[in-house]
Image (cartoon, rainbow, N blue to C red; front, side, top):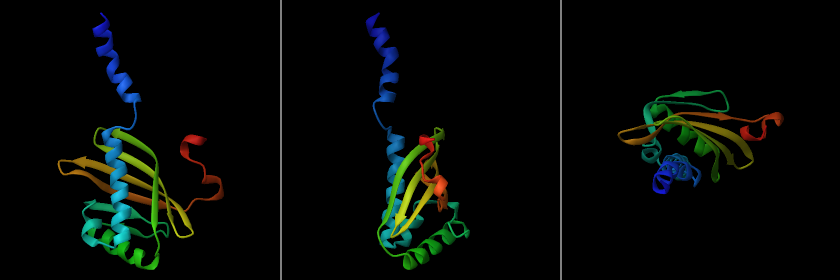
Length: 146
């Protein structure tokens, strides 16, 4: 009886033990994104994205497709120099293979939010979409702090 109870409860305890491997993989994708941008490496940047990925940047420009994303990101990195910091604050899974990661994004004196939509396929996790936002005074708290 005790063994059966332990076996039944084990998944509950494991779920509370800490980040899952999927959460770690999503965080790693955001880290790889920041690193590739800092290196200004078009191949490393492009490898992170799905072919039809898109990005809405804080200026309102909408980049569609991997090639447009890479060109836009490299141009942006050339204009906005400095160390890029992305700190993932929340991850939410919409299914086994789709995740949304919200990160505080800082470069120089610019402080923004970035939302990453990622999808896992046979090749691993890929970024499907990014939304960059400049927060207003009312939106500086994290979603889980309201």
